[in-house]
Every structure is written in structure tokens, then in C-alpha cells.
Length: 133
Image 1: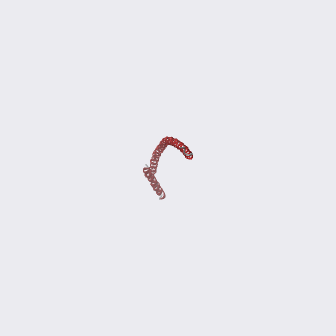
Image 2 (image 1 turned 90 degrees about the vertical axis):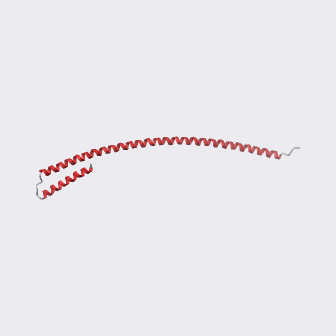
Image 3 (image 1 turned 60 degrees about the vertical axis):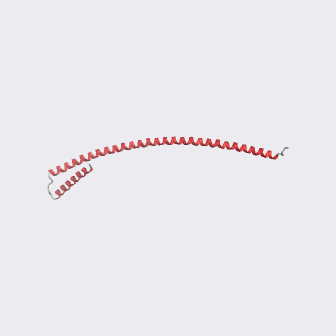
């Protein structure tokens, strides 16, 4: 399409240059020359309109493609957010379970330590008493 417009414009410029040369040489510019120039201008205008129409179509299609891409990105982002939120919930649940187990484990160690200290105290107390025969 652009090539066709370029060819038409080249023809027009050639005819204008030819007409200008003829005028400088005091040669008569014929009605045929002017009609030919006018015809080339009309053809070029038609080609430009066709190109403009095609360009509008391409621009509109590009706009629609961009809007569709934007919607796809939004959808994918929403899915990704949901996945992340789900993973976050799973991690938090697991961390809570580990904390509860750790707290229970520490509590058991504290109870064992208390029992051990009580036994040590009893043993010390028994060792301090004189043995009875």
C-alpha cells in the first residue's frame, strides 16, 4: 500500500517537474498534461484514503489486542494472588502447629527438670540423715 502511494507521488512529482520545465521553456502545457496530472492526484488521494482506512483498522485492532492483554494480565495476577494467599495460609497453619509443639515440648522439659530437682533434693536430704541401725 505504501509502495503504491510512493509510486503515485513519484508520478505526480515527475509531471509537476515536466510541467514546470515546459513552462520555463515557454512550451505550452497541454490540457492532456494537466488532465494526466489531475488523474494522478486523484489516484493518489484514493490510495491515501485506502491506506488511512487500513491504518485505522490496524490501530483499532491493536487497541483491542492491548485491552485483551490487559484483561489477561489482570486475570493472571488475580490467580497468582489467590495462590499466594493460599500458600500463606498453609505456612501460617504449619508455623502455628510447630509453635504449639515447641511450647508443649518445653513444658515437658520444665516438668522433668522440676521432678529432677525434687529428686536431687530428696537424695541430698536422705544422704544428710544418719543411717539408723
